[in-house]
Amino acid sequence: MQNKEQRHISLDAMRGFAVMGILAMNIIGFAMPEWAYVTPAAYGTDTLADKIAWVFSFIFIDGKMRGLFSLLFGASMMLVIDRAAANGQSAAQVHYRRMAWLALFGLAHYFFIWFGDILFLYAMIGMIAFRFRDWTPNRLIKVALIIFALGLMLWGLQFGGLQAFQYFATRPDASADMAQEFRKLMASSDLAFNIAPDLALHRGSYGAIVMDKFAEWSTPFILVLLSIGETLPLMMIGMAMQKSGFMTENWDAADYQRWVKRMVPLGLLLTAGLALWMAAVDFDRITALAIFYFWGGIPRLMLTIGYAGLLILLIGHYRNHPMLARVAAAGRAAFTNYLGTSIIMTTIFYGYGFGLFGHVSRAGLWLFVLGAWAVMLLWSKPWLMQYHYGPLEWLWRSLARVKMQAMRR
Image (tube, rainbow, N blue to C red; front, side):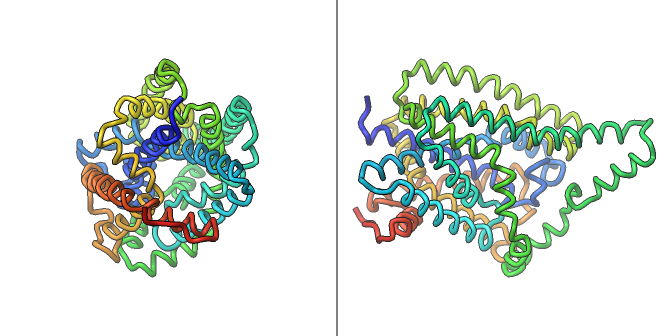
């Protein structure tokens, strides 16, 4: 049995890897039109290097780091609940105050910084997940998998149906009416690439960008409905992992290795197959959407769980390595690093800053990712040697506890 400080290193370091990995995908949303995230055919895949960058991100990163972050959110939620109960506090009051403030941070992030916020989503789903805090790990996992399967089935009905419609409407023997309906569908606002207005907006003024998001004020709430089928199960699995000791390195190395072998090779193989499928249909937008929402769901889940086990093995092996300490520090300040990268990247790419939106290639964006990783690793550890929390972690904690928290060590 490891001591409490050691057990927290695994969570901190995994959170550090996750927040760095999330940026590797979010950079597309910061720097390119929204459709570029779904399919490289939309924007920013002109050279071989760009195609290699897309393949690498799609197979190894896309959705997996966000999934890992969701697992860690569920695990951390259990830690907060357990600590509140151990200190004689109301776990419900502590949890719901934290989630309420996180929701407000998320809305501020969405409306005034960047449209790709996940904090509001996590706050809303976290309020639901709290209801399952007393469940056993087995029950949490079983119900999580049922919810995940139901959500995936609904996406399958929608996008599988859309793929079937595309298949029959584009056949040589398709009726004129069906072919016309398909052309109208592809030209609709939901499926048209609509790149020019996106470029003009994000190359424009700060006021125009903010007003556009206020015009789409319901987006954060819609995202909760669209994402609950994946995010809630992942949080519940994270809660189960924390309860069972998976997240705190209390399992034998052989058990972690077994889960890695079960999940990672097959998950990567399936994801590579999806990448080949997209390339074979020339990155068709309907296929890309179907893969994003439906076909990629199971491989993403497999790799998310497999990555968690793999990272725990790596953390155990490199526990005393100076770089791991820096990654763990970045994880302890993940809230500040997440919002900080949004502020920095929108300033670099949006029109009110340096105006690079749509001007940097997909491969070239990795230079900005690596630069941001370096900043995270350089500032987090020295800061946390002087202070108990990252700046935004301190603010969130103080607001949630209705009391200014001691900052300096």
